[in-house]
Image (cartoon, rainbow, N blue to C red; front, side):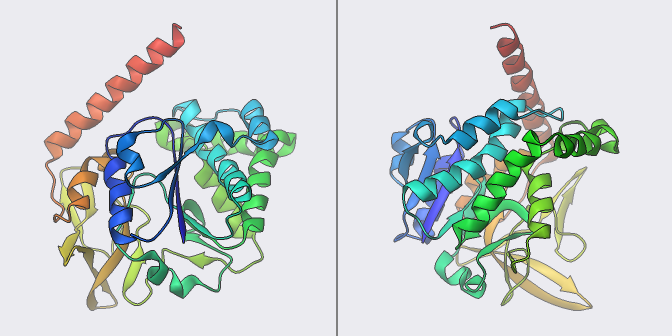
Length: 304
């Protein structure tokens, strides 16, 4: 099966993510669709120049996109645009089936086996969110791509997005309140008539992780100060977490771990199959430094 990651710019953690896919799925073709070719990345993946996969629809989306939120506009736009790019890539390379994986997701299983329970679905994802997406029918991805464009080119739909942001509490929620591809994917896939595989379901005591920061009350969490993460431990280089439901305790195997936002700090450690632990002090420093870099970048962009 083809595995695809779409990533802009350079990120230190990406090398560990790519290496981990190659270790667990040595015979798979791994494509990195990106703006920068890197020799380190090429050890584990095939580089695809993102600038050469630009359809009229992707250009139209960039021209019509309106940012609603306090997150970085280019980042949020790209997160939506990547689904159109993925569709165009599959068309151009004549790929019938692929697994899209966010660039901050570590893989720990043979994906052909892990996805076998979802083989009868044309598309599978977690909680109807566009994160890890197993695509067996490009038609549904094509419909989603067109829906993204529709949301920003149709006046009524654009007004709905504006109301979703300005007429709710989201406007007061900072970066987290921004309108994102998660909002639009949840809306679209909730209305799809075709059955959709749910990768967030526990199947055969195993699961694809939606986000390492979520899991209460069923999953055991590691809590320190204001931070909490699933209490991940390893057995034979496979991550597990204790799970409790209706008085029954069991350990759940994780095919993947999703290390979003500040939890990217732990990608290297977890890729080396080390049990998760953390110091809140270092997380605070990391977040403050990241915020400072963002302000500097914004200042430079505004003065160019």
